[in-house]
Length: 424
Length: 160
Image 1: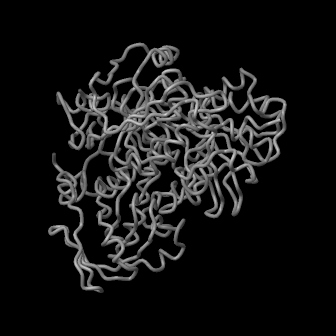
Image 2: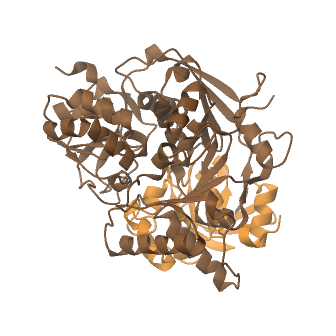
Image 3: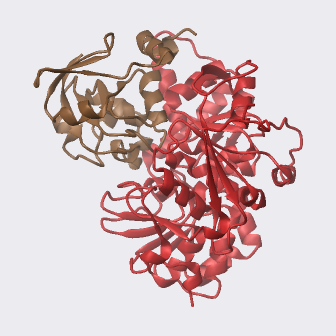
């Protein structure tokens, strides 16, 4: 009678059964740090050393992997130094999986987690980033932690969790062609609110999710963070097995919910009823139907991030931009080099350039207001990213509308928020 | 713990305003403190005093996992945040890193406490005294493990 999340956490804590609310120490299978949380962990290690703790090795360097994503290409002297510190750290502790900017495959950590199959079904995965939830679409328990907690995992291989209640989101039937997983997750966050799943797991299923690609499912789990969730998860199926096999991975222990698994609440959505949806400033829960915002004039369209620059996101944007010309500044930043390469091979990059957009390197960049295209005061952006709090993408008085790649691309063409069906 | 209140009467105070993204590259704790709450209150670093409490609405600290957020508040002198509820990563960062106490209060305390009030917080009694208004409020007790980690002085000092 356990659901997939309870089963994974029970197994990882050496118990036959766990119930929501139990607090357990869980053995971790994989852990990720990046160029923000990595230096954060290094600072924690320094603090611990000052208390007399000796730290000359970590728990298991083969279970740790490292991404450079937030401030690459190095935004300034401090971020360049952070990348050097991170490189020294991985060398010192013998961490081999370090995806370096400018050395083959690299990209946004959450994108690498699935592109490189860094995490497998049934595993417990923690990362020093709030969108670690993304990877739950691979049938794993995946949750974000801060620097102290990640440092604790690096030294001890375990961490405490409260067993979460699970909210089950059932999608009946396929989403229409003009609608993407992004529209559905924005609708869900609008319905349950920024803290509607606080401390809980959001599990996705139903025929609509079975029909979805793994990349679409990753969009759903990615934004569970915006509803306050501890994790998001989708049960493994043949689509996932095929996705992992394409990446050379066939051996893992799948975990599935029992037939009589318990969920705190079940929400049902009809695929055919989901509309192109946008989150207005300054909160992901502040949603509206795209068509109701067609008078909003924009300065910029941003197609990037772990949420909205996977291969199918780029394909969706290209479908709209093909043969058309952008009316506002439009930036496309594929989320990893592997995706960049496929987009090049499929001719998508040419479509973007022909439309007048600029194509940039994978980076978290402007999504978190770090660099590479941040917004000025009063600038208004439509973005395929995940958050739109004040100052998220730049000036505290800039505005971000969150949307699907289809809506963002259609809006880039007209300069106003546009439902893809309304393009001439 | 005694201190005075800086109150923000709003929900969903997120980590992007507690410590804005461009400062994520900074790991010098004193330097981070200079930018605490910058996205919401430019004058925060001028008016915050050692021992102060922040009082806010629900879902305090939502958004990113950046530990910079509790660090910046802690190194500004904030000893505790009293809120209707907390986002999960902010909560565990505050406790596990021993940066500040995330204290859950109820609606009546939230509405009663005013900016500038003097409070005395006693976590052994789960009690908050409002010395300005001469009132006493209950705080939500910490769950068992959280209480033990706080008592130990952070996760690294806690022995399971």
